[in-house]
Amino acid sequence: LLSAFIYFNCTGNLFLSGLHRTICRRPQTLLQGRAPLRLQFRSKKSRVRLEEEERKTRNRTVLTYIAAAGVGMIGLSYAAVPLYRLYCQATGLGGTAVAGHDSSVVEHMSPVKERVLKVTFNADTHASIQWNFRPQQSEIYVVPGETALAFYKAKNPTDKPIIGISTYNVVPFEAGQYFNKIQCFCFEEQRLNPHEEVDMPVFFFIDPEFDSDPRMARVNTITLSYTFFEAKEGQRLPLPGYSYQPQ
Amino acid sequence: MSTAMNFSTKSFKPRAPDKGSFPLDHFGECKAFMEKFMKCLNENNFDNSLCRQQSKEYLECRMEHQLMTKEPLEKLGFKDLMDPPSNPTENNTKS
Image: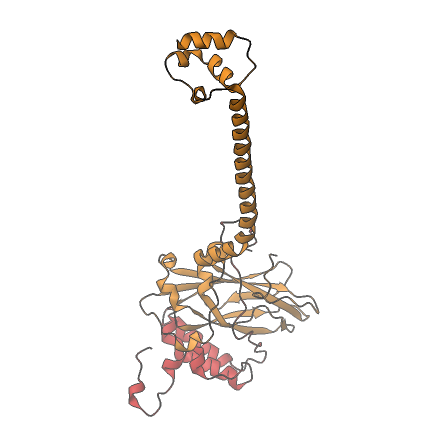
């Protein structure tokens, strides 16, 4: 009976309805006994209208989902800015400084005697500055939580005064956030008269929290590197920390 | 220079020192203390913990000669090297 019905449908003079298409396209599956759902509908007209309505609601649902996804994406891109900053602070990715350290921590910190760290010193000069700049000790052994003093020496061998300005770098980078300088000679112009030699101290400490950071568990050597550049007259460099700009 | 702006590379962000910059000791007023400190370091295999007395003296010299703003030494982390006040229970075992 089913096969007769199908034969009649496919060869008869019917306008293309979904039912027609479904049946005639896959006679094989139908003959095997799987009847499409739409065989339930009686008349063709209501079938068509129902299908159109179904299509319309389906389209509308899809459109709503797409619109919602679009709005969600826009919202996410706005929210990403503070979220990313939080993520960076939490994981320390990108070398973001751990949210502020209080300078009064120096007073109350106690040294972590078990963790001895070697701090090596490096001194560089830019090619155009003619100072002789070198550290006075190649390394020093400190413990976190204890303030330490180190010296560099700079000499101006030329016959004219030279003004230098320096910056520093700490490797490994993640240890840099625990490396706190109380006072040093960086970021300000230092003037050396002809043939003058001065000692430049750096007074620093390593935050005691260094010992409890799991990422620092394998770090035993920290290198502090200073680089001197020649400063032009009247040039004021922005102090880092207020507006960090990549050079 | 750490100028990489990639996402996952770590870069270093220099920070200004807490108390600013040391004025240069043009006249070598505290050079003697510095020499003592360096000598102590050389003798003790560059162990900072053993030479803190000398570093304290160097900073005191700086403060005397107007090369550093005067500050109570406890704020500079020398609490353990200060003479304890009259009560004997103040003896912290930190140095």
